[in-house]
Image 1: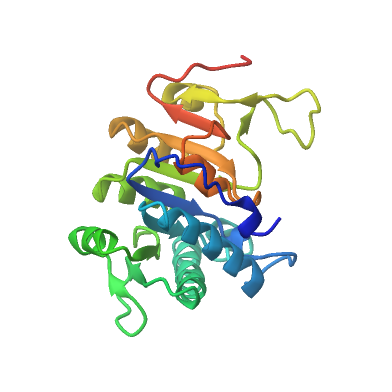
Image 2: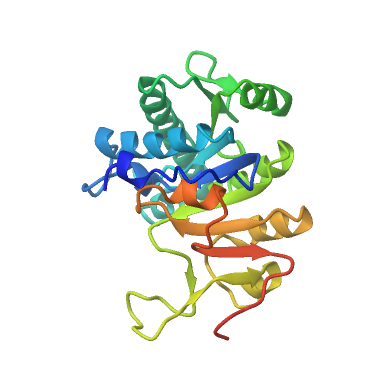
Length: 255
């Protein structure tokens, strides 16, 4: 389905004013096994365009797993710190590709990096990020936290708190959190609503525990949803009940 077919022109107002969208590196792969596919990257940019048309401010934290994963590199003989820094640099490559796709649609975008690299990205400064968002620019936050041993999920939770976002959207390959792996267990059911403690106590792997705890401490709701159904980001910001919402009041369903 193309973007034009997935538009939700029904007069609804968005339920969020400012979002942080967490994208894994797989969002940019397309039909390949690694690297960056320009067509897939453009599709992500088109989904973001639809959200901006509703007046929502968008910051993006992008992963680097399509290029290199720090933990996997560690298993190949690299030490963890080196592998994590390689992963951070991979996120900068993805951020530049996504910035290019967004700007091809006529939307101003800025890349901000937690690791200084003045020739390609601004430094991450929360007040500057907020100012860009207020001016209608997309801000892509790269290089993780700038420190090893922290995932891009934790980065997304931290940045969402720092810039005063209303929600953290975790875009994935599945349409929410399930009682078991739906690829393996045909009886697995989707859990539409969970609490932070549900996620932590049950060891659900939607985000690492540091990220979930940061969101819990800052009462930052998390919505886990399928990125690859075109128009889903727009559906989330308009309040459609898709995916799984994690907050302080959620009810575990299907326990």
